[in-house]
Image (tube, rainbow, N blue to C red; front, side, top):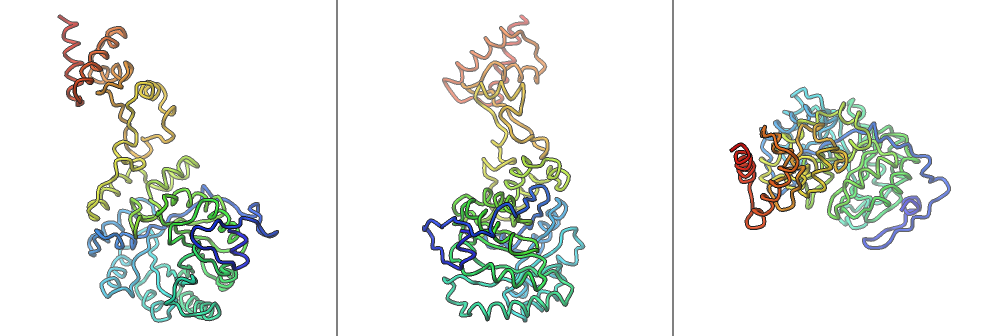
Length: 406
């Protein structure tokens, strides 16, 4: 992939890319910043979800929550999309949030002026270089000329200029030359997007490594999740020298969405707990996801990283025993960092006596280990005949304890 980016070769979906590197494309030149990344939360992606709600009040609530959480950048729908989109952009810019507000426009002077007039801190200029984008109708020389004019105007307004191509992994033209040109023009950062969701972590690492060796500005990356690689791709991008990762709450967005904020932070807290916990207010994540889920009319998945109801649940006896003694045995993340708790499930045929002992202690009931083991067999026997609720299991535990006192 790196050599294709450099040579301008075209990569089609399904074709295995050539990973041969050119002499100047050594990964050793990239500088991973796994503990200095910045997050761009795409509020506009939520509007692209079919069930998403896009009224002004909802946008303000979510933008405020994202800012309070510690998100560095919030990207809004283009003010050129509609008059209400323009008004919403202005309204959120006037909130005085800690997050920097961004929007995106096509490579058009008219749209750039409209965006700058809303008061945003940054404007992303997006162009299509894909051979599949027949509506483009421009050659590379035209793309460069127009982009440079628009970038110069945005900078003249004292606004951050960000340059983005629409699709960097499906069909590759000589993007490196294009990115070098805008980098020399003084953009704050360049953005590469896997809009189709077809990239693999290896492809991402190759492409971003090459880009890192070609530009001196920041690098933002955008990954769709059609093949469930968005989190892995974001991590690979940071390893290769990217600086900013696009996310959305719960990963919602076009089709299968993009890199999910919570899942990305679950990955990154393993890399550098101190950086993640000091930069973002992680205990607010669950409320943030519930807020977005409510307005998007969706449910938080049961297996959602960190906040799904099964994220820190343990049921098998061996697992339960180990977690009760040393949580890190089966938990790579401390749930307390995110303000959630683990659940050792004890009301099943799979339960072990250590789980029952832990529950008895929670209920304030003292019993010997031999008594706990006998009690455990009673619960297992009952669970073989029907499904038990927590209340059912607690009732068995209390009844057994009363029998011991008789």
